[in-house]
Image 1 (cartoon, rainbow, N blue to C red):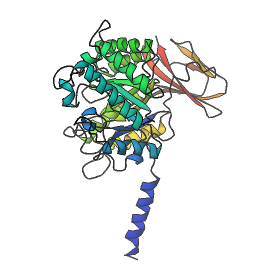
Image 2 (image 1 turned 180 degrees about the vertical axis):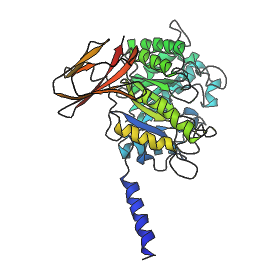
Image 3 (image 1 turned 45 degrees about the horizontal axis):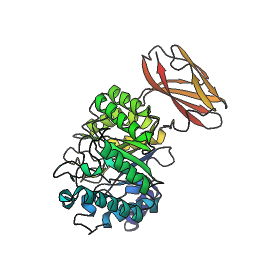
Image 4 (image 1 turned 45 degrees about the vertical axis):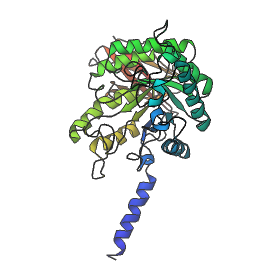
Length: 402
């Protein structure tokens, strides 16, 4: 019996591991991470969206002109497709990790190489779900030595100030007509001025139908700002009527409790926002980008840190919804909005529960009535109202309180 028991325990643990599903399985939004050698172990037991960490950067693929290293990128792409996870290509054009050989070419030849790079990616990966056309256009454009130096080949600043970026998107739209195109930038969530400039560029692209998704990076040095600032930024981006993707999220963990409390403050605000379609962690195991800051969720001994335990429970219980298909849904509405003392829920099916939460996910009020008296504790601001109907449907809306 003593010899059999360990085997039984091992089998039970193995079956439990095999049965574990991604945290966001069955949710309207996905929760992903990066694909790289240090991050791939048990990936599919936690995450359901894939982004290659370094494998898709031009300098990684074509370090030597016309000599391609597709292996790591193939691994990420195939892993996503085999598991049915959305795949985000990172990244076509950037001012970092670019091939050095392109820097000294004439602009016309550089443009030919950019077209060839895009053509080759399009032919090899026909089912990219989300494509980062440009990464960090403000903080790291492909301008000057060490940065790709093909800024002027794409048109430079031009009359719009961003002609190079617009041309890059035009080239991408021609080659990836069925892929959702996006750009990605950091220091947006924590900077209202940069966010307003970002919106301006998004609208320039939107005028030509060149952009489908807005990417905002969530590195730890951006989310130290207050929640009010991040909420205001998300609201300004949402005014473009484009979906938002929170990319490259990492939350430092110098101690378990610091990381846990930071996750509780930051993650619900991002996850619950109705224009956010998904969040990508920039790694979850040791060996990730912010390793020294201990941003990993799996500890060095292989155990789950408290923030990951909380995250699983939170995502499982959350009813975060998207406004993108719901704002004009005649099955559900709340009014008045903005509100002062009460709100009415107008639903085509009987309402069984109304929950009011703040933007970090804390439940502030619960009612079983379609007419809800707002508690006096609700100060002026924006809240989330979730409604469950007798038919089992769940709807969410933002509510502004005066």
